[in-house]
Length: 263
Image 1: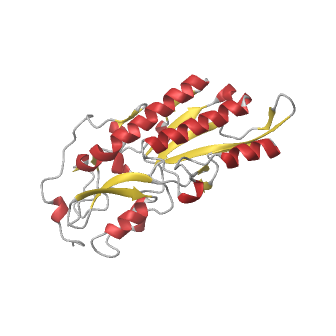
Image 2: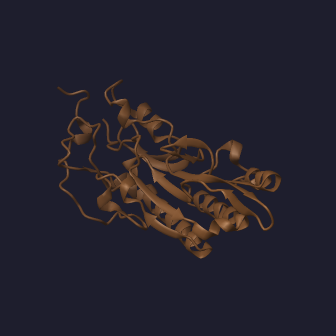
């Protein structure tokens, strides 16, 4: 039984961008905004700190970014591993998925691609390209800026002076094309609402709180159309993922009980 119809890909499924513009002229404002975003992610359990990035009270430990700024006048915002041309922090999220018996369960995960590999019903039945490794459930990408002088002035701005929220899995969407499932025909869709209803409302709250913080700081917010996949686009808006959006033609009952692999 396999009722996980979602996949994780190398390219983004959905991306939102916070353009900071003149906010970059105030390092303190940028640091405060980054802290607000991390706290919104933690409170909504979609951007959770790993043990090495967690303070004693369970919050994100931001001392490293502030000390780097105070010591070197270098501002690093969500600067971590390289992913899809940008950097992002490693983080976890509380997600819902179907276990091997088809039961919906919830738990924390740091990598949905690794999770799907564990849940695959038959070894090598799902191509690795649908179980891409190395991406956090919600990627928060940032930048690095060097300042000098008093007041501090950016001397070397990054090519992208924005904060990006990136999803590499369609597990957040109410319907998915189920590319890894033997029944997939890219015409009919698999109903993923049982899972999405658990975690997507929390993602949407995080996005709403992040957008509000960005606007209050003087930045702007938008969905990045070029980094939103066609199979997620019907439900991805500037404010999040619509669970009550359009209902496509869906697969008949039994898709989760299909034999793997199938000729």
